[in-house]
Length: 110
Image (tube, rainbow, N blue to C red):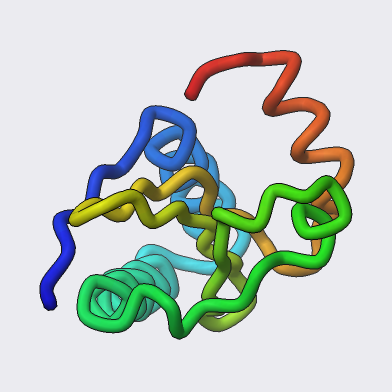
């Protein structure tokens, strides 16, 4: 089954921030490679949404409807509902997820 992907505003903002960071600190070419890998991972999730694991930080909060998949050094956090996959976050895997979640909840931009 092929799922439809909805990129939420929060994930779009994450992608913009990630793009700016990579271009500034590395290069536009590095961003292009990173973005291509992210798109490939998302295409894979469309066909196999349960392939992602439940993020530990969210499982501890009993939010088991969310999953994550890694793309290089980035975590893509998504939720599967019926025939849709909602992308919530695209963040560097080395960042503190608890702090990001707190900031995201305070920002309330889902």
